[in-house]
Length: 182
Image 1 (tube, one colour):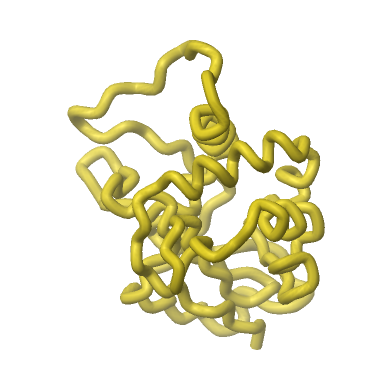
Image 2: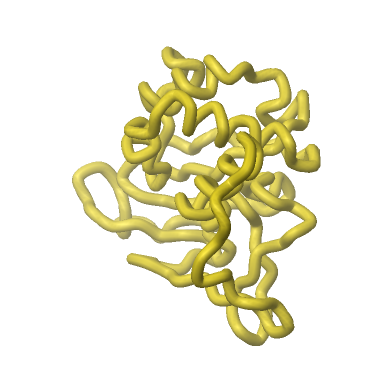
């Protein structure tokens, strides 16, 4: 099922606490990277959600593992989206998006060697975030990924963010390739 979405605020599920109003400064690269990922909202798209009575809640067992490989993309109704038409549709868990660019799926950012960023280097990560292209010269990173906002981070910020991603539990999850527009 696809839902239209301009913006969606994530609320903690029943029994979960709200984020702290202020936090102590990060003590190391992994903690600083976690802070940046949290502030940047990386999990909004890259963490699958479970539907609860209070709406979608992040699936902590699949933190930053991207669009579920076994969750097929819903068909986009004919004539609703396409080149030259503005708008977007999102999957119910906000890990797949359809728009004039086609259908994009949130990547697996866990350090799994086969399906995530386990074999990436910090330099490859930084080059990808600076150029909006995989490894700096591969396929384009598609909307809604705000790589151009991430690109303004300092090299140290990006290294810290990468250190955090590499510290996560690896999740085997082969995210589908983008689907071009029709």
